Image (cartoon, rainbow, N blue to C red; front, side):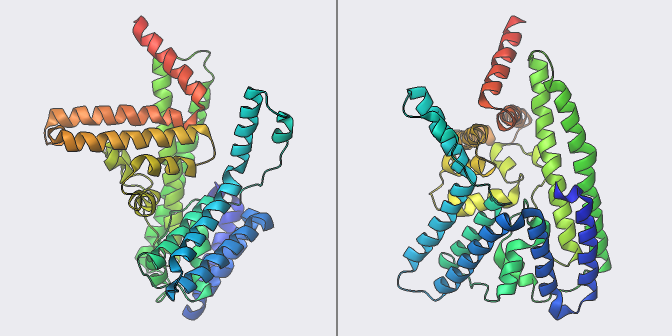
Length: 391
């Protein structure tokens, strides 16, 4: 986590002091320079250049789409195709090559080693984040007829605003850009709230999430899987995931407040949800709503495809893919039950308790799928089942 690096807080102190001292007309430019320095520091030339090129492409295409050219639909499709292709190339090429090598080896076809030795590109920092950000930008201009950001400085700040650069929250450009018109120093109350949010986020990350990582590592060293051990790991992995990511989000939101900006919330007490659908309206909300608006709705409400993409967004690995598929199936089943048997979702303490029990059991199990390879999860599941049956 970059927010735990001492360099970052020295950098942040300089940025905040400069922002508060510089005149209002220069504040956007100051944040752009600061964000560019941060991006270069954490990503290097290999990570910055692809994002600069993608950003310039998106900015120019957005201006062109706003003119309503005769071939606007083709240009929009081209833009989405380029962005998705770049994401696939950087983030998933190594995974595809590895699977190809494994498949050829299993079939005894060709020289497997030549595929295993293929050099694949290293993904630029936050490539998924940038791709989704730019897809949203083009979609809003072409489909929802939003006005593009014409000022290149403001578009740059929208793209690489440093508190959210590594892992979000995902921002919507109309809301973010509108705040830049009257950008000014935060009020005393907003500054205090921002500082408190940062402290809370660091506490979640350092004092809870990192401690849970140590506990989980100790439990994973057990000689054999048992049902109580597997259940404990599943619960702890869920809390570890929440406190780690929610901690990062709190710091990002707090830093934004200290420069007079608001970025979206990402979590709203997700473990208080009473159904899977409600959970996804409370968990990683900026990404959940992005998937809803730019994948789920355009595809006519296909939860399986939407959640598969959600899973792969986390990384190129079978566990993420399987996790997304399971949640897609879960949401689909829940929606069909709601339509066919609406009484199940009526008020009532017993019904609510049963729904919540089923939801939490599913959610808890899928944390294992998220964090461990499929083969390990299978071993955990079989060992737990044997232990329960044996009793």
